[in-house]
Amino acid sequence: MKYFSTRDRDRKYGFSLRQAAFMGLAPDGGLFIPEYIPKADLDTVEKLADISYADMAVYLAGLIFPDEVSHSELDAMIRKACDFPCPLRKMEDDIYTLELFHGPTFAFKDFGGRFMGGMLGLLNEDDGSDLTVLTATSGDTGSAVANGFYDVPGVKVVVLYPEGKVSPIQESQMTTLGKNIFPVRVRGSFDDCQALVKAIFNDKEFRAGHNVTSANSINLLRWVPQSFYYFYAWAQWKKEHSDIAPDIVVPSGNYGNITAGMLAQKMGLPVRRWIAASNANDVVPAFLRSGKYVPRASVRTPANAMDVGAPSNFERMMELYSHDFQELSAAVSGYSCDDGQIYQGIRDIYRCCGGYISDPHSAIGYNAAKAFGIRGFYLSTAHSAKFGEVIRKALAEELAADGRDIEMPERLRLAMEKPKSYVTIDNDIEMLKKLI
Ligand SMILES: *Cc1c(COP(=O)(O)O)cnc(C)c1O
Image 1 (cartoon, rainbow, N blue to C red):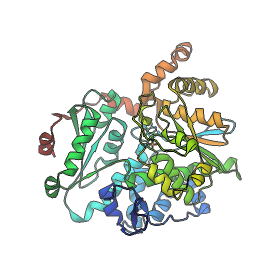
Image 2: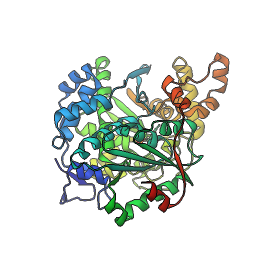
Image 3: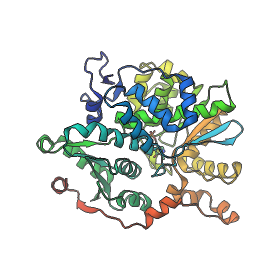
Image 4: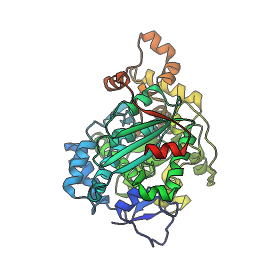
C-alpha cells in the first residue's frame, strides 16, 4: 500500500507509510490518503466487535496499513492503545450517543493520539536514533499527544503551550507525566507556539542535525484510527435495529473526525446520512447549502475545540467524494447553532435524559440529532468535567435544585493533585533550539 497526496490527482508520487507518517503533510501541501480504500467484511467486523474493540481495530488497521508493521506488532500495540471502553448509549427512542471520552485525557483525540504514538514507536525502531516529536497546542491536542506518546521507546515529545492560556485541567494533563514528555510553557499566545514549531521545521540546517517530526492532527496516523469506532458503534446499533443503516451526527471543527467516518463508509460501513454539526463557525454547513466554500477567521464559542474557520480536512472530504458537490451534498447535511443553543442543548439533555451531563461539543451533536429527527447516533467527543465553567453556567439552576456538582473522574482529580513539571521560555526560537 502506498499513500498519496490529495493534490496529486494523477497519483504520480506514492509514499511509504513511514514517509507519510514522518512528514505529516505531503510535500505539495496536500493531505495523505491511502492509494485505494480496502473493503471491510461486515460479518467479520460484527464478530470481532463482539469480542473487543481492540480485536476489531486490529482487523481494520491491517487493511489500511498492511505492509510496514507486522500483524503481531500491530496487535500488541493496539491492545495497549485501545484499553478503554467506547459505549453506545441510548438517550431517547431512536437517538443514541457514542461516548468517545473514556480514554486517559477524556476526549476522542485519545483514539488518534495513542494509535499514532504506538505506530511511530514501531516505524521508528529500526534506525536507532531518538525521534523528537514537536507539537504546539491550545489544550486538548497536547494532552492527547503527550499521553499517546508517553513511554514510547525512542521518542521524545516536546509540547509547546501558551502560558496562562490553557485550562488548569489541560495543563495538569500535559505536565504531570514526566519520562519522555517535555512540556514547554511559552510566554506568548497559541499562534506564537505554532510559529515556533513552523520555524523549527523550516530551519533545514537545524533539522539536518536533529530527527524532528510533528504530531499534527492531519497526520494519517491520527486520522485513520478514528474510522474504527464508527464500525464499533454500528455493530452495537445493529443488535437492536438490525436492518436500519444509522444516521450519524458528528460535532465538527477541523473535520478530521467526520472524514474518518466517511472513510469507514467507503470501506463498507452502512450509513443512511451524515450530519456535520457545527457551532457559530459554520463554514462547512454554509458550503453544503450554497456550494461555495468560504473559509474565514474563527470566532470564540463555548465549544472551543470546534472554533475553526478553515477546516484542514476539507480537502480530504472533497477527495473522498471525488470533488463532486452533488455527491457530497447528497450524503451529508449541515447543521449549526449559536452559543445560546449550545447552553440550551446542555439543559435539554439534562432534563430529557435522567440528569445526564453533556459537554458543550456533544450537546451540539444532540441539537442536530433533534433538529433532523435522526434514527442513529451522535458522537460525544469530550467528558463534561473538562468544561466545568460552561456546564456550571448552563446548568446553574438544575444543579442547585438537585444539590449536585459536576462529577470529576477519579483519574482527572489525581492528575490535578500531582506535581507539575515544565520549563518556561520566551517566544524565542534560539531558546527552543537549545532545549531540543
Ligand atoms: C477536536 C475536537 C472536536 C472537533 O473534531 P474535528 O475532528 O476537528 O472535527 C470536537 N470536540 C472536541 C471535544 C474536540 O476536542
